[in-house]
Structure formats: structure tokens, C-alpha cells
Length: 407
Image (cartoon, rainbow, N blue to C red; front, side, top):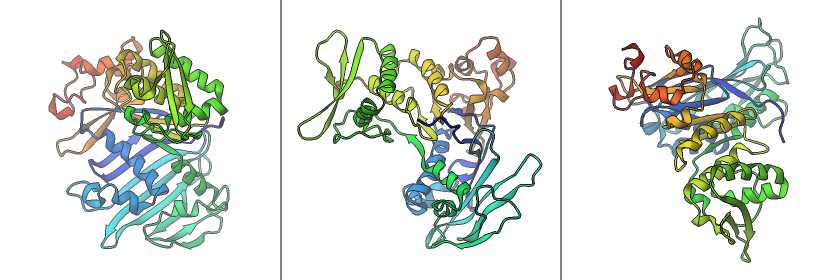
């Protein structure tokens, strides 16, 4: 089990990515939740992380193609490149590192116009770039703690659609670059489906749940074999959430496939996962992610409230926060009941401005919200009562409105 402090993203700036013409998020917390009307940009922010992960795992060109290329990716009416900037720390006390990526397209396809990494050594040090590339040509400073005085090594990438961090991060001589590559390739972005979890996969233990959850029986098998105490912890939590649920187990069939079986307390025989409720399978899947003994370094979950009873959502939010001690979580939601379990600094309200572009406001920065919460108000109910002043799909397209407590 990994007990070290995980990397943390503290800042995100995106330009020209679909509705994110110029979006900046500061002071991002280990658990960060995005809420807002349909079409406000929640899934687009989610996809920014998925796009970066795809660039590092399947390559820029394939990540580009699967999203419809510039025709679908670039903000409508804009002509400049897509740019993504993240600031992160490898550990809690380590220096803040900035990663910048700029992507454009020509007749040959997508290419990286600019890519760089920079940090500041010490509180008074001057920021400097220890990796800097333009159009596939650039420099990198090797070593564990690169500094301005160190030698800059000239490098030329094979093609301009290759990311320098992805390529040079494969070499041990570039540990800071390698750390970012490991960080991004370890992200887990969930698109869980209860129907996928009902499948009967080939037998064989697997450490991590797939994006759709179609290998849930394999992960249960892995936990049963390698981490029985952690599996029991998951099942204990699940039985508190699902009335009369008694046991979850796996069975290997003669043809080599793996069955997931779920037993209710009143009955002698378990039922197959294909006959279990959507809510049971979704809750089991989420707990499997959140109680992972060696979790991904960033987890993204879209709308966890689907198929779950509203009374379970506040507790699920607390479990997400507990899990964020070992990983960073990004969550999108429409549920006030889930938001009731959150803190003002953890929640961002998204809405479209008059030009149709996504804007974001952290609830901790909305007048009066922190004071309401200190007095015992729940954040989700404040949202539903109109105290956020935005995020209401029935008023001004979800954009800023006069908060009810100011009327």
C-alpha cells in the first residue's frame, strides 16, 4: 500500500478547449467538485484531464482524433492554439511545478507548438524552466534537482506531434520529468455503467477497476486474494448502505469466466450480478475505487448520484473526502444531497456567460456562503435556495443572478 503523499494539482488554466475559452481555477483542493446546469462545462473540464491522460497513454494524434480534431475541440470562433497549464506539487512540501502545453493543427494534423516545465528552488528563488520545447526542438536539464546553473541538453523529438514530457520522461536521467509522466499516466477517469458491471469477464485477478467497471468481478477476486481485510471493509460499508445485503463473492465457471454473486440476508442462494440492482452495483463500484489499497494518483468521477438513494450521497461525499488523503478526486454532480456533504472550498459552480463560454466561481468566494455554513447550513440546500447566485438552469441560463439573501 502506498503511504506517501500523492501529487496534488493546485491550479488549472485552459484556453480554447470547447466551451472553456479562458477558464482559470485557483487553490484546487484534494477533493474538488463541479456543479452547475446541463451544458455548463462540467464534463468538459473532466475531459481536459481525460485528454491529457490520453495524450500520454495513446498519443496526441489518437487523443485528437477521438474528439473530432480541431473542428470539435477548439472553441467556436477562436483561431489560436489550445493551451493547458497545470500547477502541481509532487509532495505536500515540495516546490510548485508548472506544466504548460500548447497544441495547434496544420494540414498534417496536430502538433505541439510549445511545452515546458518550470519550478522555483526555494521560497526566494527565481522561476526557471528545466524543460522547454517548441515545435519538437528544445532543451532539458537532467538530474533530481535541476537548477539554472546545470547543463541544458539539446533534444529533438521524432515528430512534432510527440509530447516532450511523455518521451523524455521514460529516461531515468530526467526524474522530475519522469515524475510528471508517471503522475498523468496514473490518472483514473471513471465512466461507470451498472450494465457493464453485470458482465461475465474472463477469470483472473485485476488490480484496478476499468473506466466502465466491466471488470468489477476481477477486482473483487483480486481483493479477495490479496487484500481480504480491505474487501471486508468495502463489504461492511456496502451492507450499511444496502438493506439486507449479506455477502458479495466470485465464482469461476468451467469455461474460465468469472461470476459476481450477491447474497441478500433473507435468502439461502445468492443472485448473479446481472440481476442485482443498479444502485447496488454502482455503490460497490464506487467503494472499490475509493477503498483501493494502492489508488490512482488522480480519480475523476462523473455524477456519482445516478441510481443511488439521495440519503446515501452525503456519506458518499465524506468517503470521497477520506479517500482524498491518498489521491486527488475530481467529481461532477447535479445532486444537492451530495453537495450537502461538502465544504465551500471544495465546490465550484459552473455557468455560461453571455457569449456562451464557461465561467467558474468557488462557493467559498460567494458572499455569505461561508458564514451560512458556519451557522450550520448545508451547502446543497443553499444551492437549491438560490444563495449561490448562479448555477440555476431556470434563471438567466444558469449565469449570475441576484442571490436570494440579498433580495
